[in-house]
Amino acid sequence: MKVLVVGSGGREHAIVWKLSQSEKVSKIYCAPGNAGIGEIAENVNISAMDFDGLCHFAKTNAVDLTVVGMDDPLVGGIVDKFQAEGLKVFGPKANAAIIEGSKAFSKELMKKYNIPTAAYETFSNYEDALKYVEKSELPVVLKADGLALGKGVLICKTRDEAIEGLKTIMVDKKFGDSGNKVVIEEFLEGPEMSVLSFCDGNTIVPMVSAQDHKRAYDNDEGLNTGGMGTFSPSRVYTKEVADYCMENIYKPTVDALNKEGRTFKGIIFFGLMLTQKGMKVIEYNCRFGDPETQSVLPRLKTDLFDIFSACVEGTLDSIDVQWYDNVAACVVMASGGYPVEYKKGYEITGLDKAKELENTYVFHAGTALKDGKFVTNGGRVLGVTGTGKTLEEAIKTAYKAVEVIDFKDKHYRKDIGIKK
Ligand code: AMP
Ligand code: GLY
Image (cartoon, rainbow, N blue to C red):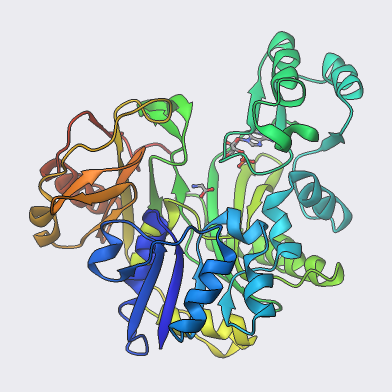
């Protein structure tokens, strides 16, 4: 089978790597891919948002299945386009991907179907939102409605911050049209975790849990990033918690989407927080997490191509999805200055040495090839994953590999997996 993966980050490298282990997969293309992906797949220079170009490529190259990794094309309707052209594709249609594309939509869905989440109000009118924020309890959480690269969430501790934050979103439009609507939420506290799940429209199969580290610096200091590291499983996601989530969050979400005529096939990513009042949904995403995927997929035993195919066919209940009984930790190596300003084009050394280490996986995110050498080409450059019997072992293995890799101004957190 020929597979086309759409995307270019560490998440897509992990997906391509796992698919490459399938005996059923004979050829993998990745659009647009990156230098690391290019070692195990054929990169195709078509943008993830060029739906016509991607469809044309899939047809002319007899691609059997296209797998979409990124949120933008999913929310923008890439799956609808592929299906209309008679092409097989893994991912939700736009009317289901809206669970990530609109926070106002997903909050309303959760409220309507009693899925536990933070109390909230939605506003399209700035004056009304301002009146609300002037009286709300503090801290208060402001969220731009649409996609904002994970940056459209402001946690405001003081009244001034809240008023200023609202202006930033709704008047200054710092996150563009995403700020036409704002969701204003109750502030919750507790450990956070990510649970990605396979879904075929009716059956939902959660993957092993993971925990992300979103802030740029150690001890959760600095700005929010796309994610500086993950480990899997989360410490607090016990069997009891998982059972509770299945009954009260996962199944109800799939059923709710069906009732609304928005059948979801693909990956539902549940961003969860274990508060004193129980588990709550912080957010939904319509795709694999990045860098969660880099610590979750190395733990998957089952053939990923079989799982994707079953989701597309609606036969996920016939697949026994199995996991290794181990732990994984992924440390992101970023360009100095990320997530604000950083330079690209620095040579990356030590990749071959890292590859030789046991239980180590180096996933490329922002890399390119220049004169036959790997160079940095983005904010997040690599995701280095180590596995082991215990979290301590996994962390040690990951950092051992991180230490043999070098590039100018590299930056990585030293406390991945250590934070409770
Ligand atoms: P989101 O993009 O919705 O995942 O939000 C980004 C981050 O903001 C989350 O991972 C949480 O750390 C934080 N956050 C979002 N909503 C809340 C909330 N209601 N209370 C406390 N923290 C929140
Ligand atoms: N790591 C968080 C995300 O993928 O949204």
